[in-house]
Image (cartoon, rainbow, N blue to C red):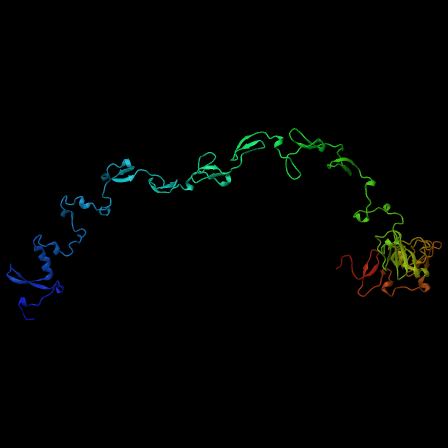
Length: 486
C-alpha cells in the first residue's frame, strides 16, 4: 500500500483490533517515532492515568465482586471494617479452630467446660431411651414421644408398683380418663346367709342353716337327710355308712335281698333251687357212666362203625374196646377184639373147610416167624410160641421154614420137622400134629406176592406200594403216612 497521510488511513474498528497490531508513537526523549502494539499501549498506559480520573460508570460491570484473595491484610486500613460491615458474615468465613474457648466467657454454669481452649459437655453417659425420651452420650435429649409408650412402662409385680392391664374378663373396667371401676353389677341380696352389694362384694357371711340348703330330688343335687329306717347311718362328722344286717359275713350260693337291695339272708343252693334245664344248656364237661341210664342208648343213637370194622386190612391194635367186631368181606370172616388180639368168631368158607393158614414157624426154636391175617385173628404175633391146643384153634396151622424138633406142644414134643412141614392144631383133646408135606405131596413155595407169609394185600390198585405196619406185615398203601424216607 502506498504511504498515506494518517488522516487518510482506513479506520480499524474495535472488534478488529488485535493485540499484535501496532501503533505509531512519538518518543519525545529520543525525538523519533516508534511503534507499539495495542496490547502494550493499554497495559503500560494504565499506569500513567491520574488517580481518580476514571469514573465508576466507565468500568465494565462496576457491581462485580472483588476476586477472592485480591485484597490483602496490608491493604486494609486498621478499623476500616466495622461491625455493620460484618453483620452478615457466617461461620463458613471463619477458619476451622480459629476461635478459642476464651472468646465464650464462663460456660461452666451451663454444663459446659473449656479445656485447652476447646468447649465441650462435661456430662458423659450411655445413650438410651426410657419413658418415651431418647438421649445421646452427653445426656442431651434427641427425641420424645407422648404419651409414654406402653413398652416403656414397668410391669407391676406382687412386690413392686408398676403398670397393669385391666382385661374385661377380670371383672374390672377402665374409662377414657383412666378411672377403674367394677364392671359387674347385680342386685344386692342375701343368699345362704351371705350378703352382697350391687358389685358382688360380700358384706358379711354367717353360718349356713338347714333352711338355706336346697332339698335334693330325683333329678337335682341338693341336701338330704338319712332316716334310720333307710339303713344308712350318719355320724357327727357327716360320714355316711351302711348299717349292719343280721347276715353273718361269708360266701353264699343263694341270698335273700330286701327292697333296698341289701342281703338279709344267705344259704347254699339245694336241688329244689335248680330249675329244669334243657340239654342244649350243657356246653362242656363229661357225663360219667353212672349218669347214663341202663338201656338208654338205642340202636338209632349209634353211629356207623361205632361197634365194628368192615374192612379188608387188619384194624390197628389201639383205640378198640373189648368186644369190638371186625368183619372181612373177602373171607366172610368175623372177629372180635379180646383186649390182646382179634379172635375169630366165624371165618366163613375157611371155617367150613376147617383149615386156616396162620403163618410160618422155626421148628428149631418153636417160635413163629411170620403171621397171616388168620394168625393175627387167632392172637399170634411174630416171635410168639404156639398156644396150647384148644377147640377154638382147631384148623389153624403153621408152615415150618427152619427144620428142627423144638416145638414144645402136646403130641409134637421132640418131633422133627422139615422145611415145608405143617404143624396143625387138632383140637384140645388131640393137641398138635405134624403134616409131612414133602412125603405127602403137599405144595411148597409161593407163586404170588400175596401168598407170602408177611404180606397182606387188600384190594391193591395200580401204583400201590408196600409199607410195614405195627404187626410186622407188609400191606399195600397208596400214600405213606409216617416214617423217614430217603
